[in-house]
Length: 338
Ligand SMILES: NC(=O)c1ccc[n+]([C@@H]2O[C@H](COP(=O)([O-])OP(=O)(O)OC[C@H]3O[C@@H](n4cnc5c(N)ncnc54)[C@H](OP(=O)(O)O)[C@@H]3O)[C@@H](O)[C@H]2O)c1
Image 1: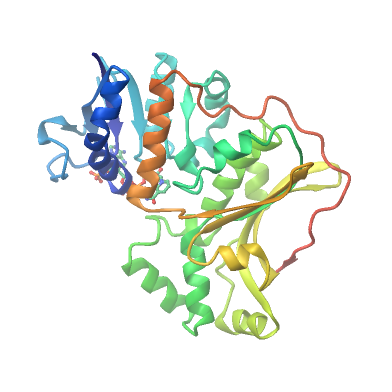
Image 2: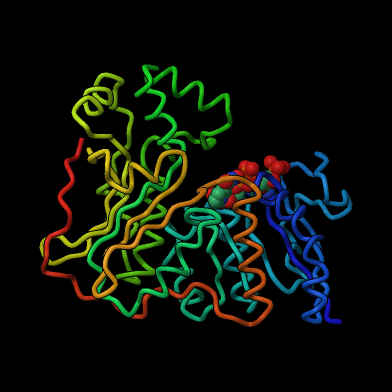
């Protein structure tokens, strides 16, 4: 039996759920000749008890965190320490599994060579347990035409509450008390989280060098929406949604995030309420629709664990599309920006 030692960075919502899932997979790993164990767990506060994680494994010291381990699982978030440790692990030749879309979007220049080598696994970073990254890689045989997604559940919740009559501030406070908002709420309401995600998807689909700065330049959030605006749209048979899109514009691929008016029959409206949804259009495959839970500890940890299986089996991680895809001449579905 070969022992595989995991360095786990982060034991919050996702990391704790992963620690709870791992014991149930012991027999399946054993069938592969592997004994998978947590070597150490990096957190901010090691004095806090974490169910399923022996206290002796917890540390707040990044020094030596990667000593004698076989794989790094990064589910802490942030772009600084998490980024430095991820890069350190990759430079040591370790496979890295991460759910961190901010890191992927913003430090891509450093990460890209390792992703191209297949050492970086990040299915959980977009749409959590809904396996959109693997699906998009399987679509490389198509001419991508456009792609549109509702990929931030918190904004969907705020919009739904405003449609029901809550003011923006009331809906915001509710989401905060329910723990739906990121520590920096601007990541959600400013559209930045959605921008991180469309940036990751765009590099897997049409342009391995898609620029984060350009995506941010085309990103708007939902702070200006009001119950009146949302209810008026509904009365006219439309729903306003925060949509992250990838589409051709004047001979270039553009990634953008902004609230748009969609007919109530649009699949993003019918499938994207209460979950994440994404419509992909390609030639010859035609339109495809993906929908599922886009957040949650267990849901996200299941994708992290799936990546861990792939890494331990020696299967490659999420490589970006090998070269920039041609930009289609035909115009994308026109959306009315709000
Ligand atoms: N939650 C979801 O549904 C979801 C879905 C998809 C992707 N993700 C991604 O998964 C990652 C983790 O999300 P989460 O919801 O699990 O976050 P979380 O609940 O806030 O947990 C973060 C964990 O990382 C630790 N941590 C954070 N900064 C650290 C630092 N500088 N040094 C050491 N430890 C640090 C925290 O330690 P303490 O516990 O001591 O504070 C905590 O254990 C993020 O990148 C997020 O974007 C989350």
